[in-house]
Each structure stands twice: as C-alpha cells, then as structure tokens.
Amino acid sequence: MARYAKQNLRRSSTMAMVAQRSEKYSSDITQDMNTDDLPESQKVKLRFLKDEYLVDDPDNITIYGSEYEIDNLAEVMKEYGFQGVILAYPIEGGKYRIESGHRRRLAARKAGIETIPVLETVPPKTEYERKRRLFGANLLERDKNPIITARVADNLYYTFRDEYEYKKENDLLDKDEDGNLIESGDIIKKVSAFMGLDVRTINKYRTLLKLIPKLQEMAASKEYSWTALTDAVTLSEQKQEELVSDILNEPESVTKAWIIKKCRELKQEEIKIDQENNKGQAVTQ
Image (cartoon, rainbow, N blue to C red):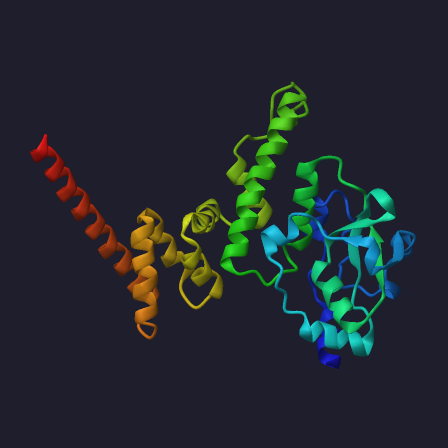
C-alpha cells in the first residue's frame, strides 16, 4: 500500500498539456500533488470541503461511465488520508463542480473521508469551455478503454465545432496582423492535436460508436481487437448480431485477423442476399 501511495504522489504526468486546454492552469500543478507540495501561489486557492458541496460534471458519467476501480485507492486513503487534490470551480448554492477528480471523490467516500482538499479553478464562461476543460483535465488521468476514448473523441468533435461556430458568429476567430483568419475550421484536426492521436486513428475510434451495443462492449473489454471490430461498421445490425454470436462461439480462435476475415465473409453474404432480392424484384416487375 505504501508503494501504491508513493506512486500516486510521484506520478510524472503534469498539467503542462492540460494547462493549454484547461484555461491557464499552472503547469506546476497535478491533481496527484499533496496539499503540502502546492506552491504558495496555489495554496490560496485551496478549499477543504465536505463531500455534500461537491457536484459531478454532468458529462462525466456520460463519457467515462459510473463504474470506477476505486478499491485500491480507497484502501490507500484509509491508511494515508486523501491522495492529491480535486480540481473544481464554484457554482450556485455555495457548491463546487468537479472537473477533475471524480474517481478520487468516490474513493474518499468509500474510505470514510469527510473533508476533501479542492483546488478552486475559474468557472468556465461557455458550455464548450466546460466540456473542453473536463476532457483536458481527465485526458492523462484515466485508464481508458477504446469506447471511452471513442466517446471523448466524438464529444470533442462537437465541442470544437460549437466553439468554432460561436467564435465565427461573434467575430472572435484568431486573425493575423493583416486581418486574415488563421484559426482553422478543420475540426477533426483540432481533436487530433488535443488528444495527441493522428486523424485516421481519431476517425477509427469514432467508428466504434456506430456499432451495436454488444460489439461496443466487446471493444471496451479489450479482449478483442477494437480496430478489427470497426470493420463491422459496414454490416447491417442483423449481420453485426451474427458476428457477436460467431465470436462467442469461437472464443479461442478469435484473433484480429479472424475478426477481419469474418466481417468480410458476412459482408459478402449481405451483398449476395441484396443481389438476389434485387433480381427477384426485377422479375416481378
């Protein structure tokens, strides 16, 4: 447990990248820092709040789900106290909305910790800013499965699109000294830069969200190649259901190549059926 606690306190991921995305956070701050390790300039923003004053971000469960592996962290907190800090900003009613630290908050509950250290951040001015900050603050702090990454990528796409449209309507897009626009409207490239993934990979992740729920669950389980499962996007829902059944019936032989081959076979079956149906319709006409 002591080793786990030290790892939590010494994790090397900083908010340097997040600072650019989360509206001017100090690059010296991580949510893994103990309160004693915070620089003096940040300690003035530190609040010690009861759990009842903390509110989850509305998009957190939608994107990341409600199931967290918090048992180990809760055990660490029982022995060593709360680990790190939560990042949150004030909202109505004297409460604070969490933008990073939902998992820590739940672990603290399980550990019976009543007062939680919160580093107060500036409230977002727009909805797109709120979402961008949520994704940015959690981007490096989650053990994400492919479906969560797909949700982040997809939501970031619409977040950046909303931001671009808002700026365009209000003449706020970045311009050079000659007044020429320098802020690109290529949204997918913005998502790519934000997540540190190439455009092709971003698009492939987003494809997962077009699959039936059972295939999404398989991708999330990490037991099967998520990249291979994206090949099923060209199949009808019925054929996707068949793919699920075939995978479950051959658990030991399901490799990436197997899934790709099976998707091709099912697609060929689908094309053949369509061709036969079209022939039948032509004859009756």
